[in-house]
Length: 575
Ligand SMILES: [Zn+2]
View: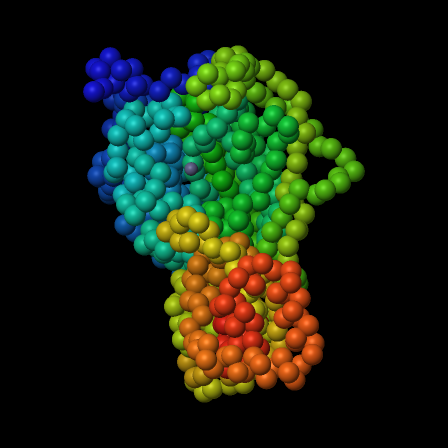
């Protein structure tokens, strides 16, 4: 039985000591008698509003502020009340799209966003920002996870007192769903991105991991499908955000994937993640991770400063960004990059002063390994920085992909992304390249509701008949790179690797032994090379020698009766 004392002790996670902080951004907190004070502010940043409270507050704000409309959970803020995608895009002002709570326990973006909406509208403090840019805001993306609220949702995080849960009601992680689009939440989000076409997409999280001084970390992929936009992020946005945060008493830092003992790596996340996906569809995208060990107040205020600075920078520098986006959307890279790595031998090593926290390690009787304790004292150390910006895998750009009519489910999933898909009304013979998938390896456990598979693709030249109702997906479109990443089997976010094509790995028709035996005898008699190959397998491969099935199959697979389409990936590349 659990003793009462034990249960009470367990109910509070023993986090490392906080660092003292008194930032200028505290000036942004509403006064206690302000009608528009948020739940977080009113409770000294102990609480965050429920879904219901959030919606009620937003409805009241919308009624009081004519600049604002609503699209279920998405708030649209536009000076001229341009509340449809078409009117918003006709006006030249760039648009910032911010989502909070994709991991619902990491909810800083919601509370910062509510304060930001107030300052853009009813108080008027930052109203002028709307002269030059629009703001779209999803306060709670993972709504079901948000309402799975408890004191125990975020063990590594310093507030709020009650938080939601990482995954949705199907236990799926929305920040792994951008390419496979299994969830209703993601289908709605991608439809919104496709319709509203923001110029900057921001996804707000809270970190886990090691202790350090930075309170707001942010960044984007080191390797880019949108190189011109990434240049703008590096050269224009990053310095603006940094100086705004510094001026308001915050400590901005780079994304820190793990305790950087041997150097800090700026990673390139695959497109199943928000910022990898945004980059792939040519929407410049920012991943924000506030630091879980900082108090909730400090994190929310830092996020608020970040939002203000991002919208301001977009308004001032949006023309250059729109030009960069246009260039990225119109470029047709050949080959199409699908994976990146840290360059092997870089002539120079980039260094940084890493604002860490003192720690001590000791042997652990609990884990049998090493125990780390963070001591709450700042400690700067010199670190090497590595960037995953060298292409490690790329695929020659196909003119188009062909999908047989029978695989309409794949075409439908492409359409969910907004990819243009044509359907043919008469059968066509097309000269194509197709992949034979050798050596398929299925994962032992499911991941995000799928049993993933990797295989070794081997190209075959074929002329293939596509029946009426088949699909042609041109790569001559802004989302052509995305189509390639979803359809090329070597890509880790391909529909193939997510397991949408498992049926092609099954063997279906088979031969009886009494049919194969006499065929094998005749083949051996007529083909000395085949005989010596068979003899060599018998002599060198014990498993083969011991398996009647494998021995018979050796011959059956060489007859025209064997399935010529076994392990043939049905999506073809147009030559
Ligand atoms: Zn997260």
